[in-house]
Image (cartoon, rainbow, N blue to C red; front, side, top):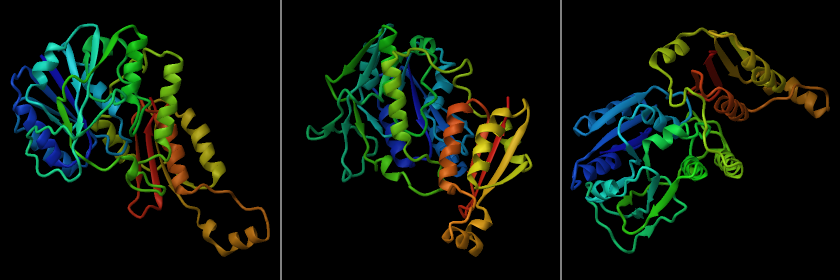
Length: 360
C-alpha cells in the first residue's frame, strides 16, 4: 500500500483533474490519496472538495489557514503524523502519473531507503491533456537536484519530526528533508531509469513575487532566507526538527476566536512603535490572551507640516512603509510564533494591516 499526499492551495481545477485521472488509470490500485487543502479561498475549496469526492480513493482535508502564509511542510506533516501505512509519496497537482507509477513505486519500497523521481516537463504550448500520460523524448527532464517528488518510509519521517516547519511560502523544504535523512544514516536514491511523471507547465512562483504590499501574503526575499536556512541545516548536519506539536494546524474554532476578537490596539507605522510591538508586546503576551492589532499609516506622514519639517531638517518621526511592516511582522510570526494560532489580513484598499494572535 502507498499513501499519496497532495499539499494544495488555490490552484486551477483542470491540472488537479489531470493528475487525478492519471491515478485512476494505474495498473494496480493499492494506494490511497490524502488531499490536504491548506487554506484555499472558500469558493475554490468547495469546488476542489467536490472534485475529490468523485474519486473513491481520495480523502479531502481542509485547514482554515487562509490568513496565514503557505506552509507546505505543515500541510504534509498534518497527515504524516497520523499515517498508518508504511510508505508515503509527496505528490504535486502538476503531476501526470505514468500508468505503472504506483506499481513500480511499490517495488522500490525498502524500510531504510528513500526514493525520489525524475520527471519530464511539459511545455507551455502542450495541448489539452485530459489526464493522459504521453511522453516525448524531447521533454526537458529534472536532475538529481530536484527533490520534491519523493517516496518515504513513514517511520523515518516520524523519527525525524517531519518536514521542517520553518520553511514558508516556497523553496528548500524538500531538499532539507533529504539532507536530514542522509545525516541520520539512511539511503537516498534518485530514480532516473524511466520517466514516471510529467509536470504540467505553469508560471514560475518567483515571478509572482511583488515588491509592493498585496492581499496575497508575501515576504520579499523569502526564497533567499529559506536557502540560507537550508545551508545552515546542511552545515550543522541537522536531523530532527520541530517541536512536539509538529503538524498541528489552526482550527476553525481558533479562526473564529481570532475573527471575533475586538481590536485591542490601534498602531500607526512609526518605526519605534512597530519595533516595540514586535520586540516587546508580542514576546510578553499573557497565556490565553488574544491580541488584535490594527496597523495603519500615520496621517501626519502625508501632512504639509511633516514635509516642511523634513525640508528644513527638523526632527520628525521615522516610519516604515506598510510593505516593510508586513515583511517584518510575517518574518517574526513564522520564526517565533508559527505554532500559535494567528492571522494576518490586508485591507482591500491596502491601507491597513490586521494582526491577531492567541498566546498559549
